[in-house]
Amino acid sequence: MDLRVKRAARIDIEITVPGDKSISHRAVIIAALSNGVCTLHGFLPSEDCMHTVNAMRALGIKIEQPEPTTLIVHGKKRVLTAPQKEINCGNSGTTMRLLAGLLAGQTFESRLVGDAGLSRRPMDRVIAPLCEMGASIVAEGPDETPPLRIRGGSLRGIHYRPPVASAQVKGALLLAGLFARGKTTVEEPIPTRNHMEKIFNYFLVRTAAEDGGSVTVFGDQVPESRDFAIPGDISSAAFWLVAAAAQRRGHLLIRDVGLNDTRTALLAVLLRMGAQVREAVEDVDQLEPRGIVEVTGFPLKGTVIQGKEVPQLIDELPILSVAGALANGKTIVRHAEELRVKETDRIAAIAHNLRAMGAQVSELTDGLEIHGPAPLHAARLASFGDHRIAMAFAIAGLFADGETIVQDAECIRESYPGFETVLEEFTNPKRMQVSTPVIGSLTPTPPEER
Ligand code: S3P
Image (tube, rainbow, N blue to C red):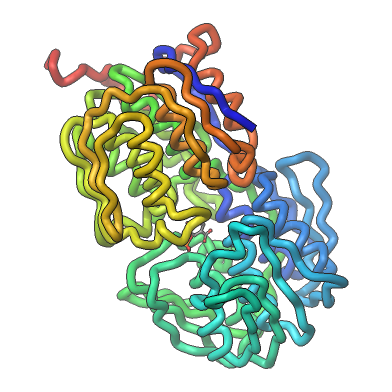
């Protein structure tokens, strides 16, 4: 499918975004392990998350979906049954890595397969520690790539320091730890999103967090069933936030979005690039903080993104690179070599597409150097089968002369069903819902008028 994008209208709009992908995956799994029926509201019915739902069904869990965003999960007190056939994880790395952890603790044998893209992604990062815990996992592809054949064992807890900062690895080990003897500790080199820890706590699974970033789960616990509502995904919001930030006087309000502070580094970056950004947490009673984000656009300036910030905005780097191309001066992204093993090599894909639109960009081994501002011109662009590349360059198209075409854009459904409808609103002035600033009373003044 080709996605065609025209230049943006004046942005003044209020939206919501679909449920958080990371939380949706984890919620289904923990609810399935719990001791009763859990209703999950705000679930993200994207292709990736549906692979997790179908995997849990294949493991004997009844999951009803009375409407796309509501799941009723019938927890079976950690009892899973052997799947009849291989489990298909599609393009979802989170599904495969979290399931590897879950299945490592089961006594039956299972096989996880993925599509061509997922079959190229490294799995040694979960295989090595799970085998150290006592599982037997064989990667059938070259260089420890999928399919994975997993024979679960009687696991023992370990203390593990992953060589890469990865929430998927942490999540896999914590899930395995639930089925292990003793305690399992993950000592992260750099903190990553903490949704698994939060969900464990919410479902009354005992964990311990230690200074310096380690998290421990104690084995042999059954999660207490709970209902909850999943907030909007700030990584999906990121596309619209950048669009508004990059348009002078653009104004965007997003309600009911997740504001977990391990996910909001993007807001700090937009602020330092010169946008006006406000956030207000409205609800902390629920499992995850949620609230409003409001952005007003100003001429952006380049920035440096590196070090500890990188794992906290790893999924936002494609769209922040587009922001960099629109900003004055140099934007540098470093320490982001993980981007090379995402749904595609995102460093190469970003550089390729930005150049096709006329931007000046150098590829680094671990990031990018982008010289802005570029007068972007419309181009025919590849998605590389990567949802975040497709969406980032649809947003770039809002700032280009002419009609930009993003090819093979159906991959957007993996994380953001409905993206195209919102995109259409950003190009059609009549459909904008004019909103007034809501957070704080100040009406922003562009810097040159101050
Ligand atoms: C995710 C973790 C991140 C992120 C992915 C979702 C998760 O991957 O890029 O989109 O839900 O745990 P890594 O753990 O590989 O960094």
